[in-house]
Image 1 (cartoon, helix red, strand yellow):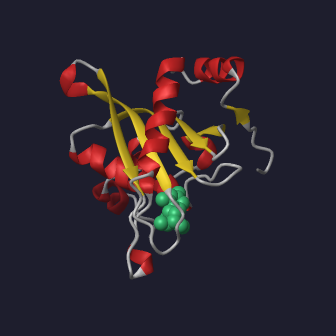
Image 2: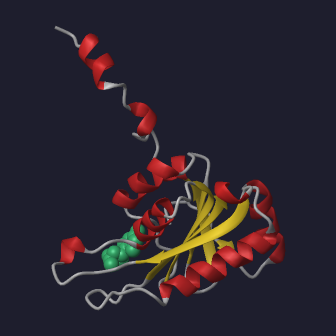
Amino acid sequence: MDGIKLYDGSDPAAVASVCETYSISTEEFASLRAKTVAAKATAYCPYSQFRVGAALLAVDESAAGATTWVSGANVENASYPVGTCAERVALGTAVVSGIKKFRALGVATDVSPPSSPCGMCRQFIREFCGTSMPVFMFDRDNNFAVLTVIQLLPMSFGPDSLPSPEELLANRPT
Ligand code: THU
């Protein structure tokens, strides 16, 4: 776990304190966990048998900022590299449904300690989620870890890292 804290998901005091830190209610945490674990059951992973579920606690800006949820799971392929991770399935589904504001991401696997989003997913998450958004990683034993997007991807390259092509061209060193 590289010094990353592991929380006991069945300890109400631990859960309450984490929820306060990341500005989500304990009810939202319980739903995030339940939806993340439920999403795992929809994984298509005949090649690895490594099920990953993802769920997003999101804001529907077209419905007066109502809370909404989007789920995903890993979808593998006979041509192995073509498979897609759960996190990217969930985020892609949200974005094409018009949901672009996120408060938390949950990821669940069948292993313990918790698995964390792969490098490619960290970059994909960085595109759409705030750098201080929490990513909850649930393991098989009701324990979890939580890190923010910037903790998962320090000194990240995001949409705001790209000057316009015109600006780059105008300021190109000779
Ligand atoms: N996987 C995810 O869905 N998310 C991750 O962040 C790590 C890996 C999937 C990809 C593949 O289907 C399986 O887990 C084994 O790598």
